[in-house]
Amino acid sequence: MKVAVYIRVSSEEQTKGESLNTQEKMGIEFAKAQGFEYQVFRDEGLSGGEITRRGGYNDLLKVVKSKQVDMLWVFSTSRLNRDMMNQAVLMYECSKLGIPVYVGSKKYDFSNPADKFPQYPINSVETFGKLTQHTVIANCGYTKETGEAELEKGIAKLISFGTSFLANPDLPKRFELNTELNQPDRATMYGGKDAGYIDYPALN
Image 1 (spheres, rainbow, N blue to C red):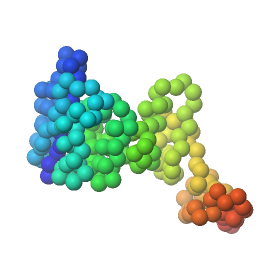
Image 2: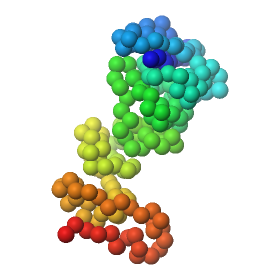
Image 3: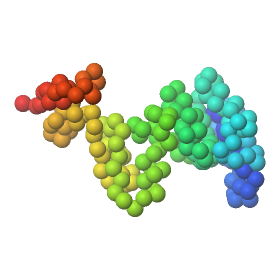
Image 4: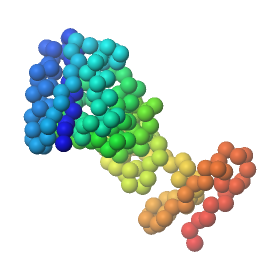
C-alpha cells in the first residue's frame, strides 16, 4: 500500500508554519503510522492556481488516475489548489476511484452528493455557506440519511429535495416510515405533459 504525500508552498507561505519540510514531515509520519510506503510530490514557490507549472501536482494527478497510489495525504485542501475547479478535478478522481483523502489526520468526507460532480467546488455547502449570513438551503441529490448528515454539520439549515419529491409526493411520510421510494422516470421529465408529474403512486 502506498500513500501519495502532496506538499506545496508559495514563497510567502514559507514563513507561516507551512514550510515544505513541515508538511513533508507530517505526511511521512502519517504514512508510517499506517504502515504504508509513501511517495512525496512537491511544488515550491508556486501559486495554487498555476497548474501548468506545477510538476508535482501534475505527476500526482497522473498516478491517481492510473491508481498507482492507495491513499492521498495533504496538509490542507488549499495545498492542492486554491482554484476550486482545479481542486475538484483531483478530488473527483479520488472519489471515483475509491482513493481516500486525508487532510492532516482527518479523512475527507465524500458523502456530500455535490462532490460527485467535478464542475462543483469541493464541499460546496461549507465553502459558500461560510461566506453568507443568510439561511443556507442545501440541494443536490440528498437522501434522508445524507440530508440529516448535512444538517448535523451545522452550516445548512434546510435540505430541499427535487426529483425525489417529484416522484414521491408523500416524501415526508415515506421518510417518517423509512419506506421504499418511487424512482423518478427521467424519460418523462421536461416533456410538458402530466406523465411523470402527477401519476406517481402514493402510499396507501
